[in-house]
Length: 100
Figure 1 (cartoon, rainbow, N blue to C red):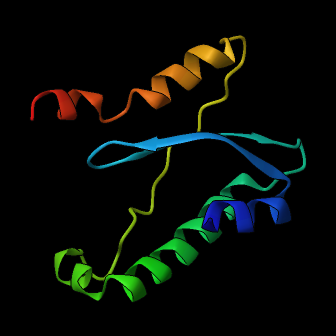
Figure 2 (cartoon, rainbow, N blue to C red):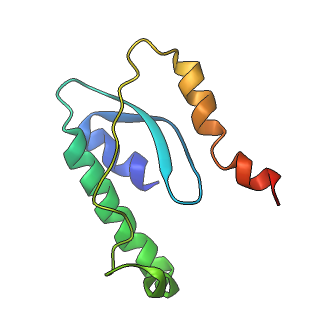
């Protein structure tokens, strides 16, 4: 919900997302003029505030109140088929579920 609320202000559209135990993968489309780093920082700030408000017990597990790390990795799709990227994102976390 947070992503979908913030993204139009930055010219970004959510395509796919999923997570593993310690990271999130997001595939989105952006316009050439999109300020992606500002969008990512706005998303991290808003989601961190809301998560900590809804789940206050999580504060005890955080490092210096930080829900997200300050870093992120941004990779462009280039010539890669979108469906290959989508399948990779959809498969996140499956390895852990199979070992349960």
